Image (tube, rainbow, N blue to C red; front, side, top):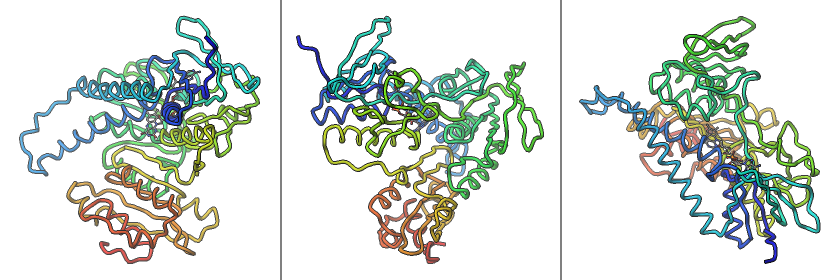
Amino acid sequence: MPETIYDIAIIGSGPAGYTAAIRAGQYGLKTALIEKDNVLGGTCLHVGCIPTKALLFNAEIWDHLKDAKEFGIDGVDSRKLNWGAVQERKSKIVAKHTKGLDFLMKKNKVEVIRGYGKLTGPAKEGVFVVDVKASDGKTTQLRAKNVILSTGSEARMIPGLEPDAQILTNIEILDISQIPKSLVIVGAGAVGVEFASIFRSFDTKVTILEMLPRLVPVEDEDVSKELARVYRKRGIEFFTGAKVEKVEKSKAGITVTFSVDGKPQKIEAEKILVAIGRKPRTENVGLEKTRIQPERGFIKTNEWMQTAEPGIYAIGDIVLGTPQLAHAGAMEGLVAVSKIAGKEAKPIDIQKIPNATYCHPEIGSVGLTEAKAKEKGHTVKVGKFPFTANSRASIVGQHDGFIKIVSDTEYGEILGVHIIGPQATELIAEAVAAMELEATVEDLMWTIHAHPTLAEAMLDASNSVYGIAINA
Ligand SMILES: Cc1cc2nc3c(=O)[nH]c(=O)nc-3n(C[C@H](O)[C@H](O)[C@H](O)COP(=O)(O)OP(=O)(O)OC[C@H]3O[C@@H](n4cnc5c(N)ncnc54)[C@H](O)[C@@H]3O)c2cc1C
């Protein structure tokens, strides 16, 4: 039998890699998807987006039950949380979607190859050779005309610490057998504030330590302020400008020494979650045999996801300069495959990648923050509409937060939209679509929104840019 030469070999089956593989199959390309783990789906499906959002939904229901009386529901005072059942539901969701991925690979004729993939060098006569080491240690070689790297990322650790029963990353915390009485979280990015939200709902004493001056530091400053206000109200303690000096094991679990403005402080807790960012997994994939020179581990690409080595593409969390988010990686996968297949595609525009943080209250944002817009020289006009004035927010009993639209005064261009409040991660889709279609604030002002909806707050926010919101 002649040896198979694939059109594309994709290394890594997270949301970036599996999306690329499905689209490659749809385009009729002969595709191999190489995965080192025994399940497809990567961080997102197994230890990221999906299990955390499952737990956040449990937490939301639990919080609603705390307010049951207000909704006229009596008799739930004796409620008890069955953590085992919560975990089981989360695992079932993950298992269902893992099966779904296996099905989609078969449906699209993608060949899944189990093993650790490594580049052996540039293409020779247009063909790359990828080493694939199976779990039994045997290495085989796979040939492909193009290679897509989608090896993802892993949690960064505080130097000198190793994850164990008390020191956790996103992997260990998703598997704990009991809700901790107290938890210190280092890092107030999306991962940190989401776990803070989950465990606070389940009555854990949560303390967040963030090195930068505010919570969710990539978001608009007003969003950080509102989250801080609500987190205070929820009893989540946090220190910003906090530098972790030492983490020691103690009787209670761990003792964390940190300093704020040079003043040392100590906290004890049962466990510590380290959520200080994610390191691209590019160390042992053979990059040194190619022209790709990683920067701090990240791979530089052009807007079509092409690397410095012709025929090798990079997508997902390993890419330099795009956010480490599942939907960013997935779209990068589609762009790369389109380029390989010679099909029409739209390159990635970083300004139009939404951020979604599913803490309570949720955060959804896209485009420039007010500060960034000013920094870039825009003459900015801002509209802000609070959910307190939205009737659907009253109905669902969630009044915290607002929608803020940052626009350019000249033509009313929408530069950024920042939402904190109920369903913010869903509501942001309208803003992304509007920006993608180059809608102006005025276009939004004449877009009819159903009543009563949370989405109407977007209509009011657009009107508030010109000081004429109806409901506030
Ligand atoms: C707790 C948490 C919550 C998150 N929540 C969200 C969210 O709600 N929304 C969102 O958009 N993003 C979220 N993210 C981020 C999201 O998970 C990542 O952006 C996404 O998983 C990146 O996808 P990827 O395909 O680049 O890499 P990964 O998902 O990391 O997948 C990489 C895959 O490659 C495999 N692999 C690595 N090296 C090799 C090799 N040499 N050979 C073979 N296989 C290899 C790995 O085993 C893995 O399966 C979250 C992350 C965390 C940690």
